[in-house]
Image (cartoon, rainbow, N blue to C red):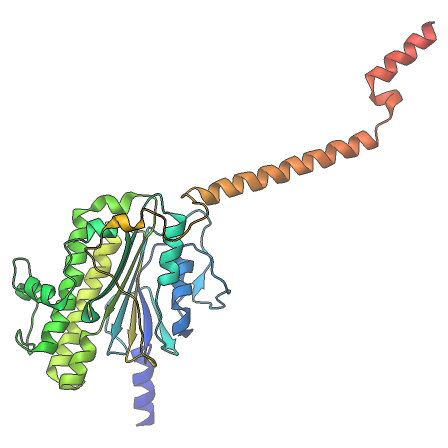
Length: 348
């Protein structure tokens, strides 16, 4: 019996709350290993994958330093509440999540907006179950038609192109509230990829995009039916398949230059309170620079910085070499002025 339990734990991989990297470009190097990461460090992990600096160094061996002049075009983080792990068939790496405290990507969103304000990147943070939405940049125009409230999403389920026509519902019902919440979140994932396919130019600009999605449909199903119920098992299998396809679609839309992470957590230790705003809010509200930005960077900042840095070092070395040679110069032999003067004196 002890041997059976050991073999089962060894073959099942990461247990408990986990962080799974579904997709990542080659220049973002995730190392496979048993290196747990704290929940409060997830925003720093996202920032480092996008090439941004963080206040405190992330002493975590799972992510290796990448090239200086390459960064992914997008980062997509999906938080799934109500389950500690999903049977994702293909992934880059998976790590155990310790200390699952609530976190947000507000700091990363502010960094993206401040560094690339001229290019108006897409910043989308969405939690359908709580009708919580936060958007910046081009997201106001691109995702204007995205259903946000539960009433809008449920109305979307009855329209053409709904996921109900393609999903194997099995034990899930179209009339139960908990089931509809879960199906609504799946519909939001489908609509996001559909809108990105319609606006493919977003993946070709020079500004990185940030997506943060929080799904709690499985948590509601667990409360309603229990984790041993067929509804919960069917929903878990459906969500794993949908997330796998969602990651592949986003990764392909961004030219194989996007990082897609899935965080599965059974329950957060403390409640999370966030500020939200409507998707229909006008983008003109940012016209007066509400963030009081001192200056703006562009995408070539790192290139310009390296050119100026090494040019200054080369000029400094040249000045030192010239000063050293002038100090040790013999005027009688090394200077043509003194040499001609000496010859003129001798002739006189």
